[in-house]
Amino acid sequence: MAGEEADDAGLEISRKPEDLAALTEHTKPGDHGAMAVVDEVRFDIYTEKRFTDDEKAQIRKVLSSDKWPKELCEFAVKALLPTKVTDKTLKDFEERLEFIKVRVPLEFLIGDSKFGFAKLLGKRVSFLSALADSLGKTEWENLLRDDEKCKQYARAAFLGDPIYRLSDEMFEGFAKRDAVPVEAEVGAEDRLEELQDVLGQTGIEKIALPLANKIIFAKPNDPNTVRGHNHNFTGDVIVSTGVEKKPMLIPVLLHELGHAMEKRVSRDDRAREIFDRYIVLSQLEATKHSPYVDSFELTDGKASGYYVEESFAEDFRLYWLKPEALSSGKSAIFDEFCDRFLGGVDREKARAQIRSVLGNFYGRSVNDIFQMIDCYVPRKLAERRKK
Image 1 (spheres, rainbow, N blue to C red):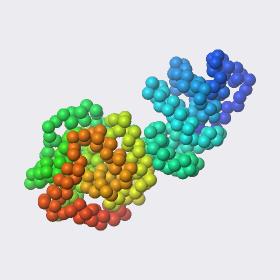
Image 2 (cartoon, rainbow, N blue to C red):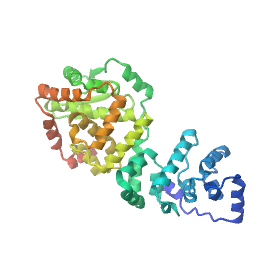
Image 3 (cartoon, rainbow, N blue to C red):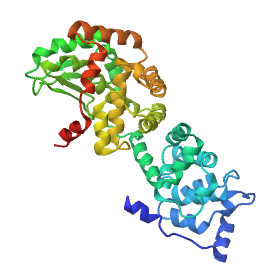
Image 4 (tube, rainbow, N blue to C red):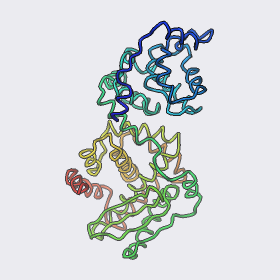
């Protein structure tokens, strides 16, 4: 991080007669717009070791449009150049310039930009648009003045990058199956039938089908165990509940399938744009009924990947168990994800089946489940996790 900051420090290039000559040489007849006033020496310094002559020409072509102010072009050359030049990155570069032109006051771009400000404006345009829309003009501009907050939101945006190892082909294979394989570890065989019944009678199996490789009931550590895991490399969902916490099987399954949904989202460009809206809301809204997520805020902060991904999994669980507790913005996001990836699932029917199984199998209501969850203390959860 410090290295990136140092790269941009103190690079002030004065305009000399020979610089102007170089600029004129690169300026084509009719280029009376922004590229005609971009400092060519500065451009060469920032691009010489990173791009070929052909790639430089492609970048110049984007910057030569009359619609970009001179100050925006100079800022872009210093802080926003793509790491690689492809049709996709050039399109993104142009979209970023358009966003900044419309949403960032020109005076903010003049002079030496702060590291956090430049870092934030280099994030995905879909994230920046969601953030600016959610904050409103005044709060958005206040954010841009606060370099520490810019860094916070830039860190939060990192989770939207595709970092998971599951391939598109794996997910496509999941969706083509008739059922999700269900297994039990050695020592947990007596819980296999329970897991199968819960998956089938709640409709959660249909939720899992396009998202999970298989579902495994792990041997509980003790009667009060509640734990789960979604494997980054295989897509397996692993759950375990001790005999005294049997009713928590359903919320644990839904939480882990929330992680699986996030992995699915990371492989889909359009879904990632929707997920950017979620990341923004995760920073602006508290996650309800989740001391577990609150514990990550205590230890890692809201801008951490841990907080955002656990918030997403907990909100996914809430979407199925108690959707009225979600904000309208988050509900709309999960509706879009379900439309995209779980089109064959009748959501209202699944919710009714989940409530029925909680009552018939375990003698609990949804509110009972959340009373159990809300009894946990975030600080104690954080301390236990750090041991």
